[in-house]
Structure formats: C-alpha cells, structure tokens
Amino acid sequence: MSEKRIPGHESEDILIALDQVEQTIEVMCDTLIRLKEKVTIHLNDADNRYQKLAQEILEEAVAPPKVRH
Image (cartoon, rainbow, N blue to C red; front, side, top):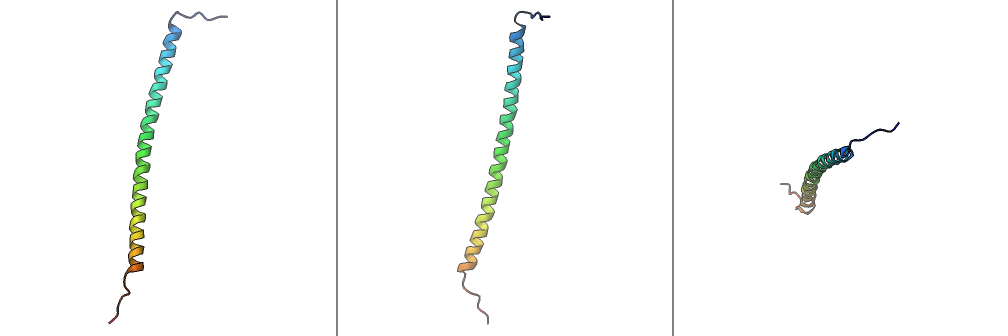
C-alpha cells in the first residue's frame, strides 16, 4: 500500500530536519566553546602552579646556606 504525500510536505519535513540539525550543531558548538575555556583555565592554573614550584625549588637550590650563630 503506497502512502500518498501532499506536494511540498516532503520539502517541509526536510527543512524541519535541517533546522533541528542546525540547532543541535549550535548547542554542540556552545558546549565545545565552554569546554575549551575550562580546559584553558585548568592548563593556565596548572602552569602557574608549576612555575611557582619551579621558582621555589630554584630559590632553595641557589640560596646561600643558612648561617648558624
């Protein structure tokens, strides 16, 4: 049994599907942007901690020995 289609109805279905795909892509892009921001913040924080730790180690290595009186 064949289904009768109203002319233009298939085109409307395609446009609706494309609109849904577009909305999905927009949500995914927004999610990726937020994820990249969080990863960047995390990497910057980690980099700052490691730089501070390296500076402390360097200062301890080069600091003159403590003099006891």
